[in-house]
Length: 231
Image 1: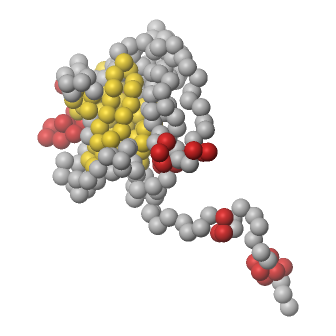
Image 2: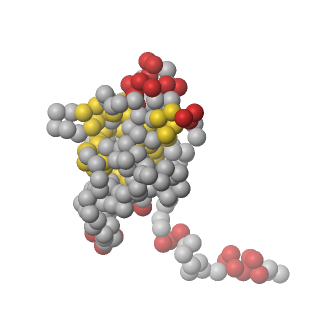
Image 3: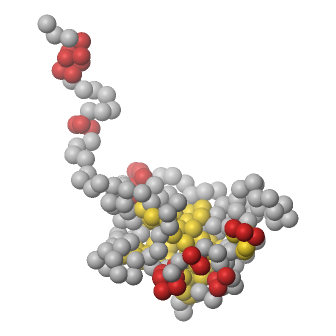
């Protein structure tokens, strides 16, 4: 006697779970799916309307159809270029990582309207969030504004910084870290940076190159590993 369940299992699969539609699944524990599904046109440009952020050469042309965000007026503050290379434990560039950033605007206020400092207006032209793929040489790039200082624990004031999250193959949970700016006001007294051993703080410091780009390398593990935070 054949049960209904056996009958259903024996029947040809015509729904969207049919393996014939997809072929063999990738062998990686996580990704590399980031270039295809998560970065978007303009996701790394927080101040303009360029397409930077995704890698169009990895998309079939028919799939690279989403428009960039609607153009806005220029945000307040100093526009900066931010870039860096992501390295694995062997010191090799990671060409399929994804970087997210989240930051305050130039006045030191996040996009959320929950900020109690009513005297600091939200900049309607700045969201403070971005996402970028690394390219074939492991380099990511953003355009954003220099963040202002925000309140810290215990009535302190934090130095200008950007929250950074790293995603990549084999990384089961995002790796959260922070980017500080070399020579910025408040680095010496920042309450979060002060919790990092002094000999490792330089892994959180972006340095300005001759072309004006703030450069921040990220080392996932091994020698010179970037400091990551538990959240």
